[in-house]
Length: 438
View 1 (spheres, rainbow, N blue to C red):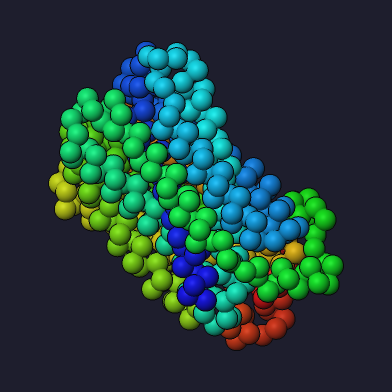
View 2 (tube, rainbow, N blue to C red):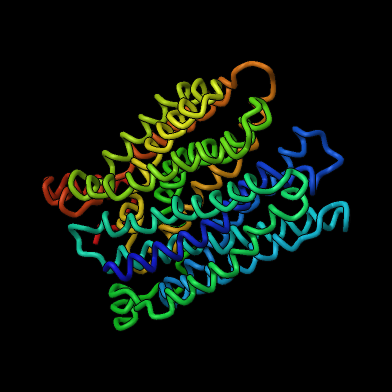
C-alpha cells in the first residue's frame, strides 16, 4: 500500500504542479504579456479567464478518462493523463507573447490550458481509485488521502520555484523569460512521474469486473441516467473547497500584490506556509474520517469555511505577513477538513463498474462550480479602495450551498454504516441513489 500510495501521490503532485504553476503565472505575469491592450484590471481578469478554461475542460477529461478507467482499467488513466498534462504545460512555456505573434498568443494559451485541464480531469479518478480499491476497509480514508496530499506538494513545488525566480531575477527578467522556467521544468517532472507509475498494478475491483464481464458499456450514460442527482449533489458539495482554495492561493496573491502593495515574494511565502500546514493536516483528518465517518467531517469543514470567510478577508487586508498567513491557514484548514476524506467518500458512493467515471466527474464538476469563476468574480468584487467584503459574502454563500448538498448525501464509511440499523442505512442510500459502499 505504501508503494502504491506513494506512486499515486507523486503523480498527482506532478499533475497539480502543472495546473497550479499556470494559476501563479496568471496572477503575476500573464496579463500584461498576453493582453497588453487591456487595463491592468482587465488584463488580470483576462488572465484568470484563461485560468478558468482549465476547469471547464476538467469534467470533459474526467468523462473521457473515466470511460477508459471503467472500460479498460485504472492504470491506463494514470499514464495517459500524466503525459497529456505534462506536454501541454511544457508547451505553455514556449508560447510567444502578444508582442511577437499577436492574437495567436492568447488563443494558443487558451488551447493549451484546455489540454492541461483535460488531462488533470482524468488524473484524480485514476489516482484515487488506485489507492481506494487496494486499501483495507478500515484504512481506506488514510490511504486515499495520499492523492489528496498531491495538490499541496504540487503547489509547493510550483510556487517554490516561482518564489526563487521572483527573488533572484529582476522584474524585467521575470517578465521576459523567468516565468517560463517552471513550465519547462514540468517536462522533467512528467518523465519522473511516468517512471514511478510504470509498474503500477491494476486494482482488484477492476480485475474482478473484467473476469466476470460486468464492466459498464457506457459508464457516463449510466451515471447520468441512474445517478444524476448524486452527481449534482457531489459537484455542489465540493464547490466550496475549490472556491476557498483558489481564493486563498490565486486571488489573494493577485489582490495583495496589486491592491495592498505586498511584494510578490512575501505573498508567495505566506501562501506556501499555509499550504504546507494544510498538507500535513490531510492524513490526520483522513484518519478521523476512518474513525468517525466521512460526512460529519465534510459538514464541519463547510461550517468552518462559512464562519471564516470574513476573518479571512479582514486578515488579508492587514497586509501583515503573519496575519495574512493566519487568514490563509484558517481558510485552507476548513477546506481540507472536507477534501482529506473525499478520496474515500466519492468512490464509496458509486458501484465499481461506474466508479471511475462517477467519482471523477462529480469531483471535477465541483471544480467548475467553485474554482473556475472564483478568481474572476473575486477580482471584480475586490476592485475599489475599501475592504473586499463582497468576496467574503460570495465565498460564504458557496459554503452554505455546499453545506446543504453534503447534508443530503449519505454516510459511506463501512464501519459507521454497520453501526446503524440496516434499514436506516439503506433508506439513506436510497434517498440519493448512491450505490452501496464497498
